[in-house]
Every structure is written in structure tokens, then in C-alpha cells.
View 1 (cartoon, rainbow, N blue to C red):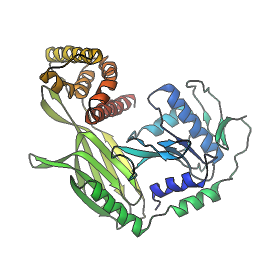
View 2: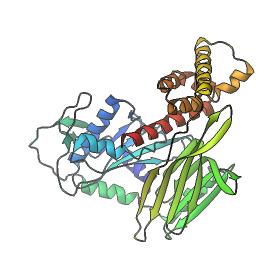
View 3: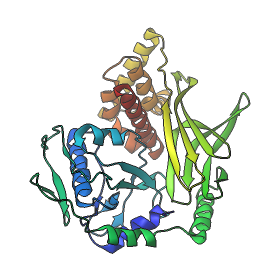
View 4: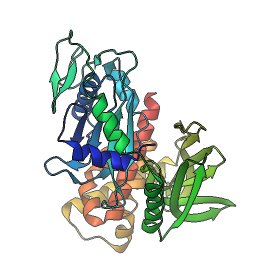
Length: 382
């Protein structure tokens, strides 16, 4: 079993960017240009590594290998993006890797591009941004180079990557240190752990409350210690957690309402299933049905939100009630977007700089709302 934190350290220590790994400060998958560049690198690394895993490490300052971190990213549909634009697409995996030196809300992203068993060449099958249909890329040194179609796939890296992965294998010491580290950093919250199949250790932490006999956790952090992977992180919504001898089930909820009259709605269920052979898989099920609220109340909320954003832009002083309303702006715009106010998302983005200036907690809530909107968007595209 590979400890992904050790793997990242070994990749960064091995060499600068090369034909089997790349590093990025961040991935901009919210716009076409960012998606296109990501697809180019996936295509190039896949074609340069037909027999071994290749990697993109995200959240690293390029020059000095400083770990700056990125936000937790839980887009289970990222494979769909690769499948939609690449012919003969490789399987990819995006994982969130916590590091002790990073803030709690930051991780290092690890994209793993798997070798293809059919030994086919990946290429663009649809145009996006400035990368056109039939374009083929291959990693040459630290560059993703445009290639002619008739090049030959060659195995040149598998022995190097295998050695790096072997050095990153987990052991009892790393596992125990990982559990203790998780407990230390979450000592102000309820923490629990569970061992599955005598191999996998999951730790989770959150602020626990009981509603109608059922336990819910907010400010939730869930990690698989063996591989040093953060499986779930949220600063906004709540989750319920259930498990049996072979599965760990996370049901994510969001609270929506007007004037603090909130109701809880299920958003998504994730099931982590562990097998006897040392493998596991994660399946997700989207559960959300947008609630419908009174239009008159929503128009009042819409107008008051916009007026508040205008005051923030002008730097005008706020009343005590308005100071409280600012804290609800991200979730209020989420509610409006779900009820047909199409420009609510744009209004939310307008407030980004002011949320960030106001407080770290409000800025995290803003980013959580964007995460939820992205999940809803992808579910509607399926």
C-alpha cells in the first residue's frame, strides 16, 4: 500500500519535472483554458508512460518545490472530462493529500494517470480552447510536445517509477504517526477511527450533534491514514456517517432556508467499500432535489442581497443587522440560484473579494457554496 504523502515527497526529491511527472501551482478547471491545459498534460503523460503510472502534483511552487497547497477538490466527474475530450483516454485519479505544514483547509492534489492495457495513443477527439481535434501530445523532458501521429509508444520510465513507488510503501510507523497526527490536529472536535479488513484505517472528526436520535457532524474531516488521503472535508455542510465491516458511508447534507429558518437536504452519498484483497473503491450517488421556496420571499432576499453587495463595493458602513446578513450571503445566493435566479452565481462571484477581506470563515463558506454548485451542475450534465 502506497503512502501518497511519501510518494509526493519522493517525486519532488527525485528530479525536476520530467517525462513521468509534472507539478502545478493550481489547476483552473473552472474555465475552458484551464481544462484544455489539464487535458493536454494528461494526454502527454499518458503517451510518454504506456507501462507505468505518471503524476501531476498540484499545490507546489515551481521554483523551490515549496508546498503552498490548494483547496480540497472532490470532483468525482473529472474522469468524465477526460473521456469527453480524449480518444483512447487513460484512467485518472485525483486525490487530496494532507501535509502537517499546510493549513487545515489546504492539501496537495495528486493526479495519477494509469497505464493503458491496450497500448493505444491518446489524442484530442474534440477541440477545446486552442487544442484541436486530432492533436497528439507526448511528454518530452519537462515539456508537453505536439507530435505527429505515427510516433511509437515506448516504455522508458517504468523501472524508475516502480523504484519511487516502492520507496513510498507504507509501514506500521507511518500508520501510527498518521493516526496520532490526525488526533492532535482535531483535538477540539469529536474524533473516531475504524479499522477495515485488518488493513485500512479511517479517521474522522467533526462537531457532533444529535437531531431526532440521529448523529450529524459539521466541520468534517475524514482521512484514510494508510495512504494519507483526505477523503472528505467541508467547512459548511453536515454529514451523517454509517459503517459496517466492509463499508464506510458518508451522506452529505446542506442546510437551506430564509431568515435562519433552515431545513436539511441530502446532497450526495459516498460509499467506500473495502475488499479482502487489499483494494477499495469509492462510489457516489447524487441525492439532491432543489427545494422550492415562496417567490415573494425570494425576490425580497434577492434585492436585499444585491443591495448589501453594492454597499460592500462602495465601502459603506453596515448596520448590525447587515453585518449579520453578510455571513449568510453565500448560502442565500445558493438558495436563489437553485430557485431560478440565473444571475445569482455572478452576484456571488462579485462578492468574493469582500468575503475574503471580511473573514477566513466567510471566505471558506463562499468556496463551499461554489463546490456545491459545481456538483449540482455536473449532475445535471449527466
